[in-house]
Structures are given as C-alpha cells and as structure tokens.
Length: 258
Ligand code: IPD
Ligand code: CA
Ligand code: CA
Image 1 (spheres, protein in one colour):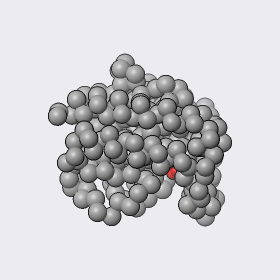
Image 2: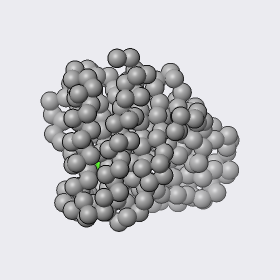
Image 3: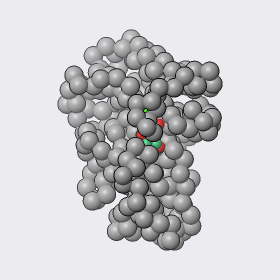
C-alpha cells in the first residue's frame, strides 16, 4: 500500500475511533500516572481500537503509543506513533479541545501525520511532500511577518512544575511582544492551528514524539517551520523535546526569546 492510500485508510480509522472521546462516563474513569498526568478509560480504549485496526491494515508496521511499553520498538524501521487522546486533562474537565494524533515515521523522517479533533469535527492530514489539509481542503500558515502582529500559543508543560518559573518568565517575554498569548492544552491541536494560520506560533518544552510527530509534519507541509529551541531540527526520540513551531516568518524573532 502506498503512503497516499495508507493516509486515507488511517484517516478513516482515527475518525471512527474519535466518537469515543464523547463518552463522558468513560472519561470519568481516571487513573493518575503522576500528580498532573492522567489516563482515562477513553485513552486505553481508543489506543487498543486503533492498534487493532492498524495491525489489520499492515502487520509489518510497528506500533508505538503513549499508554504502552515501547521498549521493543526499533525506530529505524517504520512505526506508527499514536497519542490516543492528546489533551487528556481537557477531556477529564469536559473542556472540548482534545485530539487523536497519529504519525507514521521511519527513523527521524515522519512520512504521514493525522490529527483528528472530534469536538470540532476537523481532520488535519499531511503526507511528506504532498501538502497539508483540513477536512480535505489545503491549509497554509499565516502571513504575519512580525511578532508584534502575532497570536502565540505558549505551552505550560504541566508535568514539569519545577520549571514553571522560567517557563512563565519566557511566556511573559513573548506576551510583551505579541498581540496576545493562548493555551489550548493539546500540543497536536496547537500545531495544527499554527499550520492553518489561526495561530502564528506555538512553543512548548518536554514534549514526546506522540505529542508532535503528526502535528509537526502537518505544520511543515503547510509552509511552517519546526525546530528545537536552539534552532536545530528537533530529534523525534529526544527524551523531552522543546519545540518552536511557527509560520516561518516570526521564527527567528521567537528563537531569540526562548
Ligand atoms: C499533553 C498535552 C498538553 C501538553 C503536555 C502533553 P496528554 O498531552 O499535549 O497540552 O502541555 O505536555 O503531555 O498528556 O494530554 O496526551
Ligand atoms: Ca499528548
Ligand atoms: Ca495522551
């Protein structure tokens, strides 16, 4: 199966699984993995459903996902990278901004990206070299050329409270120079909003591959730029990645601030 067909089929799979994010009873079944890190019955069910469907689609592709042990994954070979619910804290609170994020990667190269937000009914999709789309329509990053004309999303990384002081000081530096800052609470959605021009930039530290692999490809295929905070290409399997995602035009200005 070629990548265009894999993207179509995987898009159907995430859309079908997306209905489960509306199940408030299952979202109320919460287990804490850490003081601010949660998993619900929706996360595990969506993950298992998508795993089974992808396995049936092509059993040779490995499967990495947030709510499983990924120790046996060989990143050099093709691997699906799934976040079954990106924005679990939003889901628990009924704050309707969460998505399923699914990428297909091989080494550091992300081949396909899908982010499905069932609350907005939006499926963002990209194939490397094939452009980026929302519900089938091409999307592009914004035209803002200066930070002073920009709306920026600043991630808070709730898992790393010990860094909150420097993180909020950084957010203040950005806030002082742009129209305003936002925070959605789902990295994949923030990347896609930057890809389609609703945001001009998004930054967050401490991200995992399932948070940004799909959204990162969608962003770059839409004309945006994605780097680590030192300006180098982000390494997909770095322990905790600090990401700067922009329309490309305000990237250097923001790199100087983060
Ligand atoms: C989280 C969300 C959140 C970000 C965290 C992620 P999860 O993913 O993307 O916006 O701040 O760093 O871990 O836990 O809801 O899948
Ligand atoms: Ca996530
Ligand atoms: Ca998750």
